[in-house]
Image (cartoon, rainbow, N blue to C red; front, top):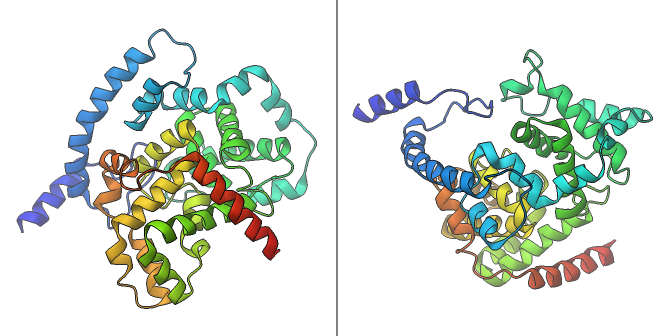
Length: 342
């Protein structure tokens, strides 16, 4: 009875729609979230003061050990777009190419590209009030423009499903079409090469790399996957393709992206390995192909992923050392193997 009353009281205090416009799901644990957020608010306030001092005086944000350390501890919402633009190189690209985004929008029509993007508009964040047709302004038009401009800019990629969710988050964070476009270019063109190309070779390669990392660090999980014939792509493709959007809670995704823009794609492996390592015994309970898939869906829920500050500390400690050189070697090996398969 007391627990039910506490939950109802929390439900009354915590808004049904989060600060980014997402409706909280029916099974949302309001009491647990309120408990977490009251503690996290103290952290956010402390970080905001430190960031304000660091960014005092305006100007661009340059990579440094101090900035890297600050980013790992979280970027306050009010500074997030500026920091992402700076550390990813997107700001420099935008400054070097004034008017380029607008010219892309006014460029030659491509009916196939436009139709592919239009098809995905209503599927993008139906649970977000800002993306609904009745919203004012409706972010669907903004999203369409960003994806259309990118398709014209990078004709090798054009448009690929998954980019809509990534671009949607960028729009929510920046509130700027042009900044979202340049951040999308940093991700698709530099941080995640070949993830969204027609062959998706980069995406397939990195899923294989994760499989290799699990094989050496968590061999019992790798053996389970082999035993039940579950390919890694089936359980983690959305983690990689959508960068954990609609997989992990919004605030946790944004904290991951803080580090992704700063440190690169290695962060995705850290998140994936932490999730699997933390829930290894739970995953090993799986007794069938379907059971394995269900376990992987379950490990992306609960307090461990909701408590984003602790979660981010874990991704830099639990997986242990993960050097760029090792990732590069594994990518080379896995890429060659995929190409040999044809």
